[in-house]
Length: 430
Image 1 (cartoon, rainbow, N blue to C red):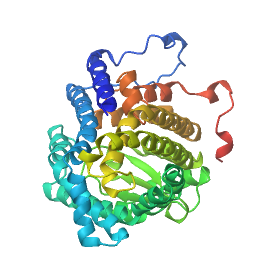
Image 2: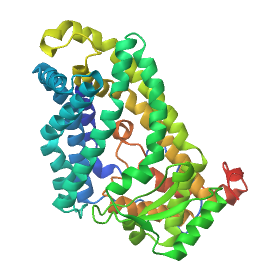
Image 3: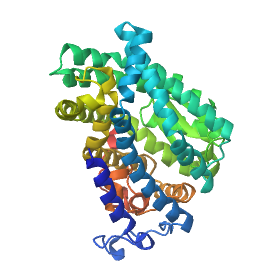
């Protein structure tokens, strides 16, 4: 049970002993400067500010604390017997099995949210304001928390009965069936999130800059993305950080830009960013990530299946249940998920970083604007308080995107058209 916390502590120790001041220097095995393509518009990787370094270091500490907390909190609910008492209350009120599961989920989520509230408040509100990254009022933060809680309660109450029904009906293969059913559920969430969930937290509207909208749609047409709609989202009421994305599919497909990035970047820079996001769509990264997530879920569920029986057999008297099919076992499942995911996360994150790198390649090939892309990421590094070269351990365990310094290097150097080399994705766009 201490696997995740112990590994997290070891990673933190190594991360914190890394020389942040030296992280902007190119790795020793990089090609010499004389071998880089000649270019008068080469963009230097910005030095991280002292504030960015402090934000990076405090984030590492929080990551370890959060990792440990993800084990400690469910363990407390198990060891104190509180989870079993929540089940008893749900049984007394719900009586029928389906309602017992739903009521347990509601009680469990409210208790977990209440206990976790101080940590959430500090990390998402106090800390973001302390580093100058947030515009959010306390009222907006509170309303977002309530909206998130509501979505969590509804979705959990509607779907939690499925794995527990499978646990009761097929205790040996429940993990296999649950993993298989998770795939269509993930697809459904990806489909409905842009339309039903995201607007609960921010206002989505049409692009105000119609000239930019026309350029984005023209780029989307070149990328073969038909029927795409461009939305501007009012994220400046929450944050000063920058972002843009393409999400959904089919009738819910949309291109979304935060108003913060619209103010920070010029049209050329924004088009490269949009080329990156369109690359995800054209290269089917959404579907591939769903596949990666599905495999990860199978592995995690199987690990839970193998580990839970031993713990229940040893501590059933303390836990207050004798079977994983008892809904009171939910904290145990979550705790095991958290522990095992520290082993699976580096592989999943490495896959995501590869997809992000290929989306960068797509953006360059469709726009051929190296300077705009490199300057866009240099601006985003500074605005988002990023450290450009955070070190390998940080990258392996925490980053779903390549380090921004590596991305700027790539935007500076990738120019196959200069030497007449074929484009990797040239057949994917007009």
